[in-house]
Every structure is written in C-alpha cells, then in structure tokens.
Amino acid sequence: MKRFVEFCRIGRWAIISMIFAVALTGCSSALGPDQLREKALQSRSNEVVIGVVWPFGDHNDLFREGLHLALEQVNQKGILGGKMIRLIEEDDGGSVTKGMAIAQKFAENNTITGVIGHRSSAVTIPASRIYDRAGVVLLSPASTSPKLTDTRSPYIFRNIPNDNQLGQALALYAAGTDNRNIAIYYTNEEYGRGLANAFEDQAGKSGLKVIDRLSGYKDTADVRRIAEKWELLDCDLILVAAPATEGVAFIRELRAVGMDTPIIGGDALDSEELTAAGEMVQGTVIASVYNPHDSGEINQQFREQFTAQYGTEPGKWAAQAYDSLLLLAHAIEEAGSRSSRETASRLAAMSGWEGATGQRSFAGNGDVLEMDIIIKKLRNGEFDYSAN
Image (cartoon, rainbow, N blue to C red; front, side):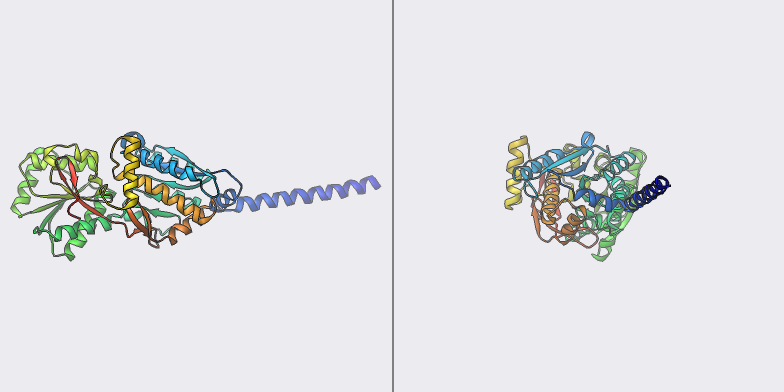
C-alpha cells in the first residue's frame, strides 16, 4: 500500500511538472516574432549582425565598396565595447520574389539587429512588411516610393529623399528657369508614377503648366509622333520620370528624331548608364543626393579614403552605402545594445547626424529629413554641380 501511495505521489508531481512544462512552452510560443527577437538579442555575443540586400551582381554601382569601407572603419574601433559588426550580404537581383524570400530568411534569423536594403521600391515595399512584423530595423538607402513609409512602422526608415521630395525639388528648379510648358514622360511603375505625380502637384503650385503626360512608346515612329505633338503644344521642358535604362533609351530616341528640348529627371538617372550614353544625353539635369565635390570634412575624408582604396571616385550609391552602415552603427551604439527595438528608437530620435551626403534626421513616419537634394547637369560625360 505504501508503495502504491508513493507511486501516486510521484506520479502526481510528474504530471504537474509536465503541465508546467507545457505551460512554459505555450507562453514561449505565444511571444510574437518581435518579442522573440528582442529576447534573443539580449543574450551575450561578440558580434552585431546586420543584413544587407542589394542587386550586387547586376547593379552594384560601387555600393559594396562603400559598405565595406564603412565596415572597416567601424570595426577598427569596435562597437558596444569592442564588438565587431558582421554583415550577411544577399543579392535579390531586383526580384520581388527573391527579395521577399531573403526578407523572410532575415526575419527568421533572430541574431540580426537591422537590415540595409533593398534597391527597388517594388521590392522594398513588400519586404518591409516582413521586417516590420519580425521587429527588424530596415534602413532603406535607395527606395523612394512614399508607400514605403505609409504604414508608419516604428522599424522602417528611409535614408534617401522620397519621390515627393525629389519631385518638388525638380518642379522648383523648373520654376526658376524660363520654361513654363512641361511634358512628362514616365514609366508605369512605382517609381515613375510617384515622381511624375509629385512633380505635377508642385508644378501647379509653382505656376507651371503640364501640357501632356504619357507612359510608354512603341517604336521610333511613335517617338516622332510624340515629339511633333509636344512641339505643337509649345513644350519647352521635359520631365523623364523613369529608371535609368528606360529613361536613357527614351532621351536618346527623342534626340534621334530631332527634338532638342531641355530634359530633367529624377535620381534614378544618376547612373553610369546616363554618363556613358554619349552626346545625345548631354545637358540632362537631374535631382540626386550626393555631390562628391562638397567641401564638408566628412565627405572629403570619405572621398579621399574611397579613392585611395578602390582607385576610382565614389558615386551616389557608394556614399549611400557608406552612410547607411555608419548611421545604423551609430544608432546601435546609442542604444547601448543589439536590441532592434532600441536601435529603432534611437534612429527616430536622431537629429543632425552627418555623413558623406550631409546631415539628416527622421520624421515620425521614418522618412528622412534635412537631407540635401543636389541638382546637377551632365556636360561632356561628367556632372556639373554649379546649379546648387
């Protein structure tokens, strides 16, 4: 009988222990992805892990070089009392499907504090929803669509002016010229529509007249008809709101049919594709975010170090990569931990941080503020910055 009572007593405690274990497991699984990440990031580690997504293979444009220069500088000093930053670099090839798969992979890696990327707004917007749910800081160095920050996520930040800001800057530049009748050519995707809309809104406020707006063309004969129509409408300025490949192709087509009307464009035209496109694209004016000749001390140091290490001048994407990693590292240092949540809070509260592309802070929705927009003109294959 004693043995039976003892067995029952042991059995009862075994059952209670099992129930308690199940309850603990249930509590753990009830934690959200962001809470699980914060719990994991509280553990000890000798490194801070940052994910980077970019179309490195097809459109690197010195982005990786700028990124690695910043990494070397940060790791020379260390972060959070001597920790090293380790980058996990992924190539999304500009693909929405691949970009989202990489975002999910990063979201499931609870050692990651933050992510820098992607390039295209069409990829970054859906990927950002994954980062938001997982509680991962996303710092976007390239995606300009206003939709990226529409959700006002505490984790999503844009380290480049959006299409509204760029479109307004271009319209204000146009208003300062003698041109008043504007034609808009845009690509029917996130970037093209956003820039065209923002420009048109500001153009109306600035006394400019948008005489036509169109997207796409079939062939050279179609371009000739477009040019003839715009000449009849007294068009004296053309906005090209398109990615570099499509934008450069359209400019060359217009020039080939004899239309020499001045052309302006957004930051997507700030590319090697434009500078290498020959005589037909000379004179194009674009709005962008980096002036390598800026006399600021940080930019001059960056330019000298980059040129010495890589044997070429840094461009916009090298500067954006460099600044993005230094900015994220600074926020992590200010947070005092690897916590993604605390890093996001520090980014949101940041004011007047200065990098190679100038000063910046962030609005409540994560959009960048105080960042200079540079107007530059292509002359003889090089950009002239004297308009600023």
